[in-house]
Image 1: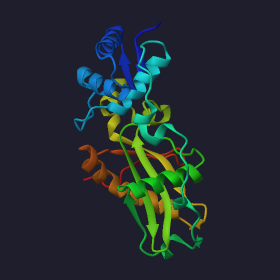
Image 2: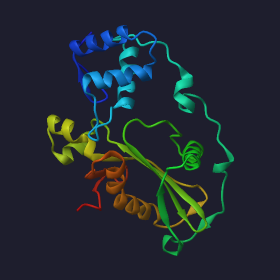
Image 3: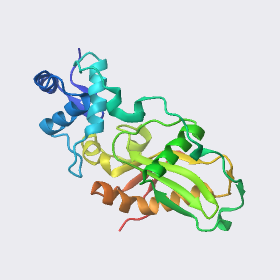
Length: 246
């Protein structure tokens, strides 16, 4: 066993692993979710907004478990909701009316963050049914959006925490490993971008990304208590600064 090892962007030494093992052994009967909360508090795994990094911690613990570095209690699928089960797609995502016109002719074009249960179900269904990657639960900080015009839904998008290492991005920024570790949370990835198959509007993609970029800093500030400064787009292998900087 070679140590230290990196899981979810954090380096773990033998002392860290021994601490995690002691916590697991001293809390028999606790679920994996409960253990992740305890470990976050004990090891100071806290996000910039002051919240425990529970999702990242659970992912890291699972990787350690699969690497035989620790032994987690048996999973309890019921505690994780539909994310761990095959999810049926509902009629919410049935094809809508075909829209074929330039984006400038769309009326009441807007993007809205996903907030209600129905909006979440719609977003999940659309991504699961029409996006080539399908639906998977995202770890870490994230924002999901739906785009509409007066005739209905046009698109589903999501933005989430940045990947730990991307060579072109890191070279473009020019930061050191220590700087990356301290500031990675200030980068946001466009993790999903779906224009519905029955929508054919020229320049719609660029328009939607611009609308999202203008509001992401404020939305992120509201939900996570800090403002990101860089938006990474999987388009033309480029990186774009957020358009809403003060």
